[in-house]
Image 1 (cartoon, rainbow over the protein chains, first blue to last red):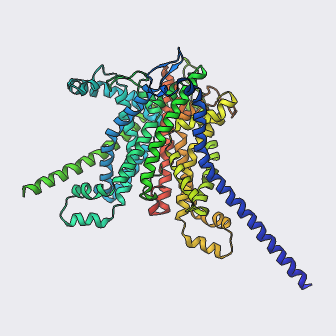
Image 2 (image 1 turned 120 degrees about the vertical axis):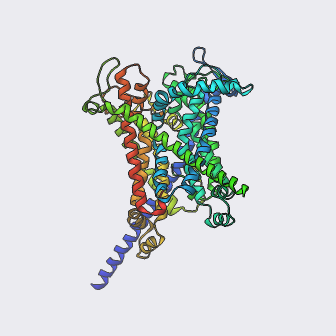
Image 3 (image 1 turned 45 degrees about the vertical axis):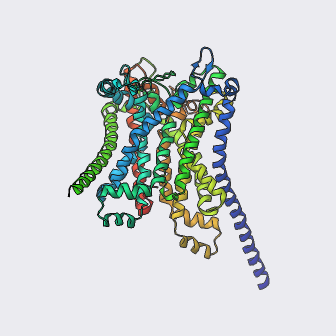
Length: 327
Length: 284
């Protein structure tokens, strides 16, 4: 009687253990599968883009990248205008965003009193949460008219008359155009770059900074000669992360760049970017070749941003994951 | 003596410039919010939430179908992206913390986190829209899910890593299998951080417009069919803002204010939740 009870007890516990083991295997397997799915998604993106771009790439070959033609009527497509616009707007964005982001990071880590740090930091981060399309309508209806009325006439009068670089700043003040798109992009990437810079500045050991102060250095000298050299790799990583954002940014640029496939010498002239072209024309693409050319543009953008982002992440990875921003 | 003065002046100038840079950043946030309130608030009325988007040339109208569509797309996107994100994050934090696969997944996930959303839209187009032959709500939700997923993977892993090892060891010592420890100990301990991740992901995808342009598209009418195009606030803003009709433009501004407020409130709630969780977990 007692023996039988013991056996059933042992059986039950054996069954329990077996159940637990099975569940453990299932749970572990599911989490593993989902982790692999993350890899597959990126692979799927690459494969689907190449697949979609294939008709255009096999028709135009490598000339697709270097030809400056975009003519849906004759079904002739080349990406040069869009590539040019993408690179130039992103460079303009960096020119404006890097110094300002650096200033913000210095302010937040070295200058701001403790009670001000968090609210200001959060406010700058909130700028990153504002959707791209909001920057677009604000840029088109508020910012571009302001530039057109006040800044651009001044730029044309002063910078435009300098021999050499003057060609970059000539022509009528449209308001919208490559320069405006670059500035709006700058506003959008400031929060990303300044967040990374702030985080890497915070990783500088206090003892290094204290040594600087102990030698009688001013705050600025400590920043420039201790903090910046120590965090150089992280700063470059943050800047490239911002560059990756700027290259792929779509809606804001679509509103303010003017959507012209031609390449003008002047930065005040309208242009287009890869992402703006796709956003504007994809639903209107009537022929298969037109659509495939747009997807080929997307594949190019993927290639460019992937390299930039991957390089940025690798640089930041060396600093340890703590220095990485979450968004 | 003179050298010291120059150094001091340089210091004041540099720090002054950095404060000015911060003011510039804040000024842009202020300018955008001010514009949204100035232009959008006047359009806030009952009809905004009770009427459909108007056809071209007619007066009045509201955003009911677009609000509904945006909510549906966001919820669908999150409900597809969250399980994948949470489970993948669990693998990274608990099972394969230092495996080679995890290093690769982390890296790819970080790349996906910063990938242009329009590329994700093209992927969803190739995957769903092209085979189906027409635009659909479900393809838009898929694109949003792929954008939400990396955010959730990242926060889940970060938050689970913060759970003290001692708590997990205690559970293991009681004879619990790892899955039981994760579900009954680690998840509850990391709950508020994981909820924050979800909120941030919702905030991120609810304002996305680029990937919806060629997936969910837009719909002038009330539609609950996931196989058909569906109206949504971002695409309505895009279409209406660039239209010549005055009431359409007004609706675009109101939609812009509505969506921005929602996202900012979500982001602020998420940050408050994280700062309560732990002083070190400030960045969620």
